[in-house]
Length: 476
Ligand SMILES: [Zn+2]
Image (cartoon, rainbow, N blue to C red; front, side, top):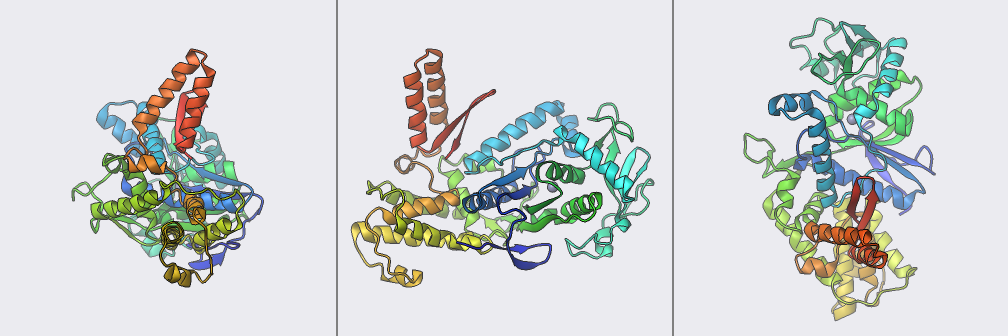
């Protein structure tokens, strides 16, 4: 795969991707607002852009993937008021839950995960620039972005001024000059989180948070901005307006990628319909469920709407069962730099370069599985080779190695195949127990035993990370 092309939401066109700096690709994705468990719709962009980040890392020397945590928001304040739990406790617990759930569905952590509350100074500085440039005004403790000051407003979402005002005209706040103007900063009463600012004690609006954090970590211009389709308006339209007006001459993100919505049983997920599902609900179905859910997500192209059903989750599990059954065989391991293995893996991954065509890449994984079956147990590869258009004749073990390599870029099939077959894959209780045993060994200064446990886990695809807060683990 030599070339990447994406459908850029901003131009509504397929474009060849050429990074601003081919030595360093920069990606920003809007992260969670931490007040509740992640639901299935929240998980979709995390998985889609995890695959994108893995793909970019395979192709470019350096990638910085930033995904923020929104830990100051009126939804969090409302949850605290309603439950009595302090805001800091809600955001800390929900952030930890988010990390656990995303790890369980095979997502690697982003390179940077800034919290909004650690970037208030950058937000204030951006707002000051917007006021100085004539794009924002202060009124009654608020600062508002003046939409009419930016002729490009609406270009990203392709909405007319009338459409954009549809919701805004109702009950227009007296401090707004125009109904469409949106909040950059708002005053906080004593009981609400607030920071000192030139406009009094207050807190940021949601949109300015992402403009400030992308600026800090990626600069005024960067390669790709991702997020759910539902964020295009107003959130991304507003991020774009703020950033290009604060830095005249800049373009902010050069490529915008948006994933489609997720339905459950054919309907929009809602608590009142009784079809509201969290990632945690899915994970409780068994140790296989995280990877099966990930496969289910990736079997649909990211821009298409995706319908989650329990049957489709079972189908994905059955498919993983087939893959792991193959990988559980004791197959010969090809040499590290086997050219045919590399060719086959590159062929399977090629569709990802075409606007992240994960369904086709997964179909090619199935073809590699067939090739391995033919090489190992016999049969005919004519149909598959006809589809592939090559005259590959892999020896036993080669197609399986290519399958593993290619699947890793999709974040799939990284588990221990024998453990999967025993129903133990992703068994976090067993991993936690091993971590505790290693900790005990270290306390007893039994370094050899501690190292043995770490190596054992690594062989199962579990990577331990020691940090100030203790030991955490992730799948390799
Ligand atoms: Zn954002």
